[in-house]
Image 1 (cartoon, rainbow, N blue to C red):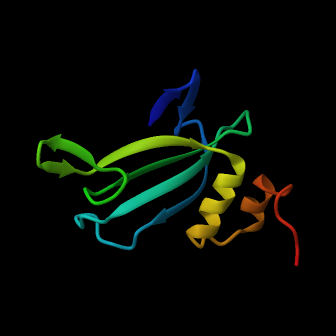
Image 2: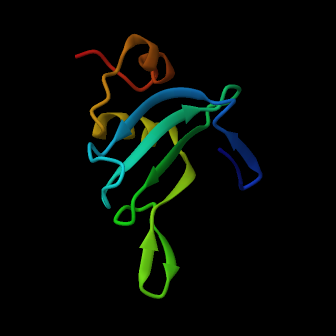
Image 3: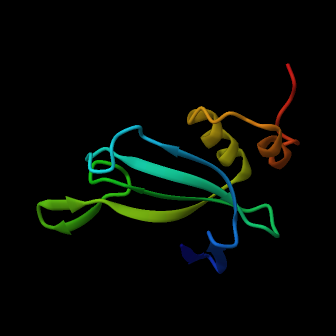
Length: 107
């Protein structure tokens, strides 16, 4: 997926895929969603590409009383990207930690 937001081009084909998460529902479920966190290869910009069913924040109105699933790309700040990893219980591997080394401390 490609999208230009505030003059910045985001491209999943060129982005570095960091991690993916999903709702755990089957794809036909109204509450199904899946998201992937990316990092732009030449900058500190992060973005999430996701899609989901009609009862998720990816829903799209198709008529006055009808909704459908949809997809979107949204940029996120670095701290928001780390919070997304934590909220989705993504195991922070050494590889993932390299992107957030300035924000992660050992206990």
